[in-house]
Length: 156
Image 1 (tube, helix red, strand yellow):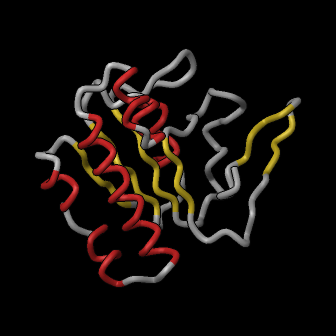
Image 2 (cartoon, helix red, strand yellow):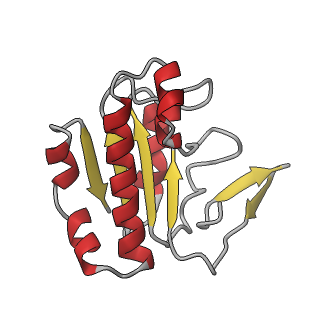
């Protein structure tokens, strides 16, 4: 919501957009239909956003597909999606705590943590430090190469 997404509370759309923040990490975000988010909730998100989710990232309200929807619904420009295509990439994967990942039945927790952390760091360096090498890294298929195609990075 701080990136500009609106959420419906008591039938009224609410925005908590915070213009002082320059870039956002949204690991395992809610999609439309969950907790007051709608298809149009993401229309005003213009700040850089990195979304991270995986094939096992589901609960009663959200599925992996609904967690990728914000990426598809935001207007084009500086929006990225890191997706781990492995059913053991669950919600706790994106908390970057290996023990939580292991307790949730994860089998590749150390790899997942490395992929998520390195992508998040490159994103932060690119958009908060204006580091050209980080921007270049985000524009390549390094994540897919390092993960053997299990993790991918899409850019809009």
